[in-house]
Length: 124
Image: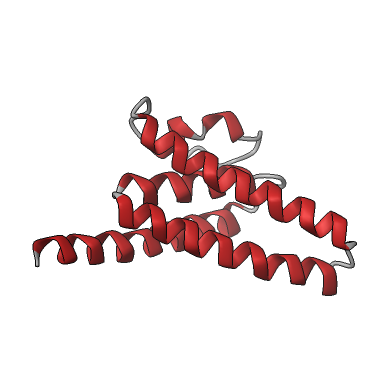
């Protein structure tokens, strides 16, 4: 029973990590900062444990599949351009999860710092 409680805490915490970083990205509104926030969200969720990592992967994949169609329909991107964007975002998500598992970084900001762009608010 204790393991399932921990799993549920990881899942709900990971959902919060994903939403919180998405919200921060929208508030920050810095051009080309989405890779940094993708990385941070996945890093934070993966640090929670196996179920946090799986939740981040599942939610990230679902969002990127949706974005593929949004890029095609609303942004007018070609199938190839949309697919390249899809693969790029999936890769950045995986990098965030990987960075968390290395144990080399004390937090998501440090682990994803290589993706920071000029203009991101210092609080992130």
